Image (cartoon, rainbow over all chains, first blue to last red; front, side):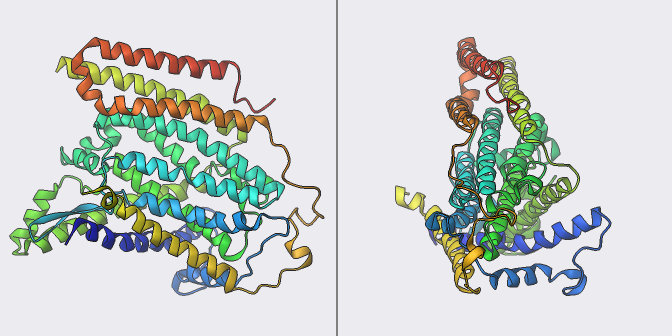
Length: 359
Length: 124
């Protein structure tokens, strides 16, 4: 089996993985919101309201998709599709688990094993701006246009902070290969080797920026319903609106996986190295292929747990913090996060220099 | 591995994601009812008859943010190769620290100037 065929086989799995998160997050978000506000939440459809996302989807499918008379028809239809594509593309560089040994050859559990994975992820996720701006402009609605403009200027502002933070992170790791980064975090086989211990400031800043990049509260200015009706998707109805929601949740999953990969050791299981775990399965009398597959699956499960943690924080923060005012948002991005990032680059530069020269 | 093989996973994923997006667009526009007429397809402005066109001039601030984004993102992109090679570069000696310090000095100078002229103040 060629490496190419293996990657191609992983792609549909990845698609299914991303799509599975959407209904789960829908119900989690609504029940968590209700729980935090002492309401019951959706609890009528199916046991404990678990079928609620299903009924939401069916309702969306059979709703009328509106195209306003004054809208730019082609761009208006295209914008929701542009919202769905980037998170799917960004996910392919995330290492999902260790490697599987088939006929003596190691196949990495990563759809696109490339040595510039970090830059690829940043490049693809920044394409999300286009969908928001296209939707805002094509609707020919003042609310939509304001939402689109706000969203684009917010997203590009926070992208600078992300870019600068990634620089100091790369200085620490010395590579752009996400798989290499995960392997480096395995070295200590424990918590201290994880990225957030090496670059705690970058972790915090990047985490904050992730909220802004995915347009989640407290940074959901683009769709601030108290001022802009629904922002850039005011004119969208039915499934087209659903696609924006899908894109947002998929972007959250991709961002969570990215953060987990960089700072929480990716697929690494705490205190257990890949070789040790594989050896445990081999000692049980399993074939090498099965043992490596079991190891990789366990690591994948560990990555899912880490993604769950970040996703939960997304929901938690949404129902805890109030929305920023627009000038506060810009101030936070340009006057706080960016200077912190620059200072961190200079600090990392000097510390790494003297650590290397001294040791 | 030649070039086309290297980027193949991207293309495969692009096809898959496009199929997902395309199917959803198809569902959106062909599964539901489609009786679009009259006020239903007017621009939504909270129930009032829509006034004027949205394709108006927008605040110059947004352009300024975009230009500043280009500058600072470019600087971050310039730093990226240095960052990757930093652990190998440090053995060269203090000259490396000086050169990168020189670059960072102008970076900080630019940032300081941008904040000083209040380029991103939104109150005014």
